[in-house]
Amino acid sequence: WPVVVAVLLAVIGAFYYLRIVKLMYFDDAIDHTPIKAPVDMQLVLSMNALALLLLGMLPQVLMNVCGLSVVTSLQ
Image (cartoon, helix red, strand yellow):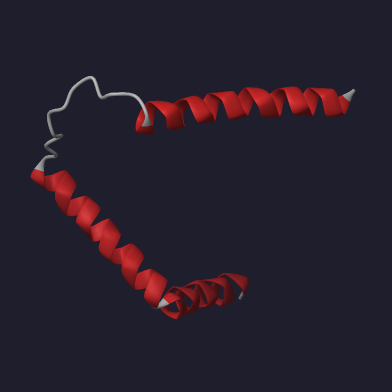
């Protein structure tokens, strides 16, 4: 009985997510005008991308900060 429920929920979830993929890649867009983001949003997203890139290349810096905070909180 639990297996039937799990399969049913998996099918419902797959239908939902595959419908989104179909809308994104296979259906025509309703509005073809490019989205213009405000300057402040562009700045925040650029800073986020830079931080993600730096933390991806230098993860030890973040690990050192996290380790120091754990050691400090345990004292």
